[in-house]
Image (cartoon, rainbow, N blue to C red):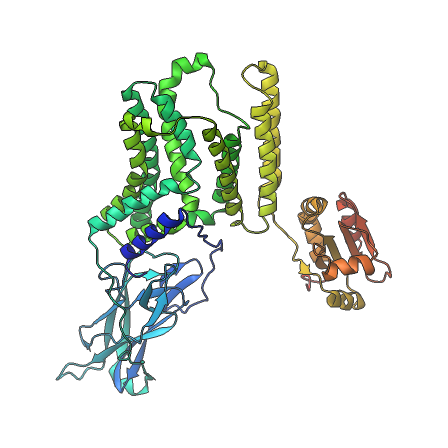
Length: 604
């Protein structure tokens, strides 16, 4: 996407001014491309974006040759010029080779301008386009048939990320004696295009400096700021001890940061060498488990900021194990700070990692580690020169207020992460977060070190049981075995008129009992199988809004006061069966079982 180093510079400038870029990667599941013929080679794929190529004999201006027919989505693009490619040599290149024919230079179509997410304008090829390779027989040659090898190389990018550079080879056989029957193609001239100004080409050392600055900026991300008071508090405590211990604990904190980025670098190496893929910053945000874990971790940390619970160690244990736990705790705190930087640093780290993927492995590994070095440097300086601590504000009430205010920042980030989850999983996770917060309060607020041990164990065991039970109930992905239709009054009337059964579940998004009915009744495989077997038309009647057709009919047509209620129209009966309340599974199953079977699958 233009010059990656230039984009990184612009991103750093924006983040320096705004402190955090609340960019969000839309959580979309991967989607397969349409079926392609066996002769088609897929060059690149990222989420829903893909591009493939196939070879066809063709003629252009009466000259025979081979047409490379590219087909794909508009957002996935190849670079047309080396000046604006992520790195020199990564523009789209096509070259032919043959032992029999003379292969001319590739003729490319007219490129178009693509504006990436950072506002850079670049010359690209994307979507469906054709590249032409002229083919001719050498002088004094009469042979007509022969094989051709076509090499294609470059790098494919989307508006979100760049993929690993590729080099592919295709083979085909052509017979020039048949060229008169080949398809005629025309490529639009590029003579009227004005080239984009070439991006400035920076050295690798300047790029690494920008990666270092990117790491520095991570320390002012709203997601990382809540960790700073914790670290400042520990630094004040360390200042009372020896300088050597202060330096050692500070370096342990830096080591935790570096270990996180070292893990990312190792993952990048494994993916590129073992699987030919690249690590895309943001892939972890497509994993619902990661999003749920991060959001719940932020909720717990927010409770810690609010003082709902504290982490204390008995003095008898602390006196024996403080040195060991001090270093381990500092490393863990450093890793936590690096992990917490990921939600708020999407724009800067996406750009940095996209640039790193276009480099050789040693360079990309060094660039990734340089981000960690930049993030760790302030702490290394602060703890290595204890005299600097004198310039820090003295501890007081301001620190406690700042700490609590950072708790609200963590809650905002937690909610933001939850919005990236699929809509059907958000309510369950939010309910669980509230239960988790209550249990954390039980754990830390109901007992302390002076509480008798049996009572402390009992309370905390109950809290753990509640958390485990709530997690088992609320966190699994809801699975619907019923192919619900949205409420349609006309379709219901026609189906009832045709003497076919109709099942309507009247519910609302704000109705907790409706959620319970959904889980206990309509997530049952036996009831879903009966609905299919009996040919029942299942209708989801959402009454969340006052003016929705389902809400109006619930009051005016069916005379029901509220939800949840399930209404079953049985063929041959004038009045439908109605099921109210929470425990309706048994009665509904019996009513469905009494319906006549239909042949084959349900028509709905």
